[in-house]
Amino acid sequence: MTRARLAKAVGLTRPAVSDLVDRLIAARLVVESAPESVDRAGRPGVPLLPAPGSFIGVGVEVAVDHIGVRALDMAGSLVTERIVEGDFRASEPIAILERVTSLADLVVAQLDSLNATVAGVCLSVPGLTDPNGGIVRYAPNLVWQDVDALAVLRRNPRLRELTLEVGNDANLAARAEARQRSRSTGGSRLDQNFLFVSGEVGIGGAIVLGGELAVGLHGWSGEIGHTVVDPGGPQCRCGATGCLEQYAGKDAILRRADLPANTSVSRLLARAQAGNHEATTALTEAAQALGFVAASCLNLLDLDAVVLGGFYAQVFDALGPMVRDIVTSRVLASRWVPVGVEAAVRGDFASLSGAALRVVDRVVAHPAPWLAAS
Ligand SMILES: [Zn+2]
Image 1 (cartoon, protein in one colour):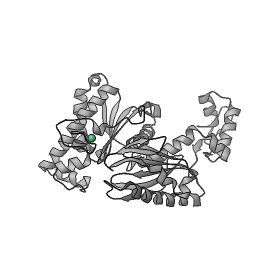
Image 2: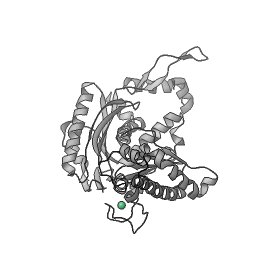
Image 3: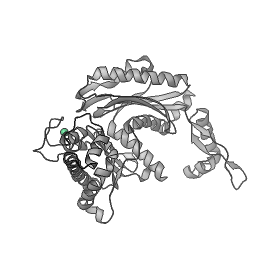
Image 4: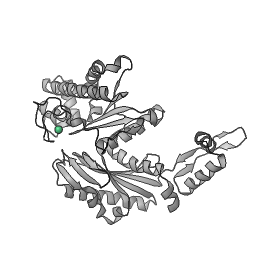
């Protein structure tokens, strides 16, 4: 975008747009790059870009198998990150939150030393969150209930000064995925309509409609992992029986494949490729359960595609075609408009990226406070 193209796009006069752009540049939110073209009046068009490295969104995550912090700038580029892998199932919430808080403290201190403005911190957790109070209502695989997560972050003097928020991991991962998909297709974010299903130990889901997350009345939509596959099935950590997680979650697949819970996904795949009966059966049953649930969701929601993220992206070649067959045969509308079943394009730790991007998106939506600050 140049000033002239922006003026045309938003329907304001060129001087009005120029004035706004100058303020964004002064606030270090936008930079000008080298002039690349000459317009009809003979003036060179100066492309405007999100400023690299000056305003930073910080994502913080507690997951079942890692904790981490990731800092992204206005362009969505990685500035710095710290990730610690481990087993945090049934973790003591305060201890883990203190650990991730000290990681975040190190990252924010580093950003301060780079003279970057930290625009806020968003904490990602695998569960139901209360976005206004910063409370994690329920995270079944961490075995957390009513944990005031942001209160722990606020005890840190450096973090206390920042805007802090909390979000659901699958919703945040879907935000990162929507952004990546619109970039890689060169299309608009408004064209993104998909059901995002992220496979980890738990299974998270998110609905992206017109590029926006459809989070439901309380922000709690997308709990696809606890939709029922068979009420007579195994006990789930949520207290119910036969949930999708008990067929297609990582622990459940490894258990059915007769492998220990810490087995890597690549080892599971290697076993299946070598024709191991337990491994192929575990993947087949997971794909079937996932396909049936995804088809039901699409019949209900009318979306373009199912996007499989988390470790599903790694095992997509083994799982995806089966899910696609089931979805194609069971979604009524697929006869007229085929429904895509695709692997996620955003890389590792997508929810961590999504958490950082939520902060960045907030600055983009409401830049005025940052203009005043400058
Ligand atoms: Zn459940």
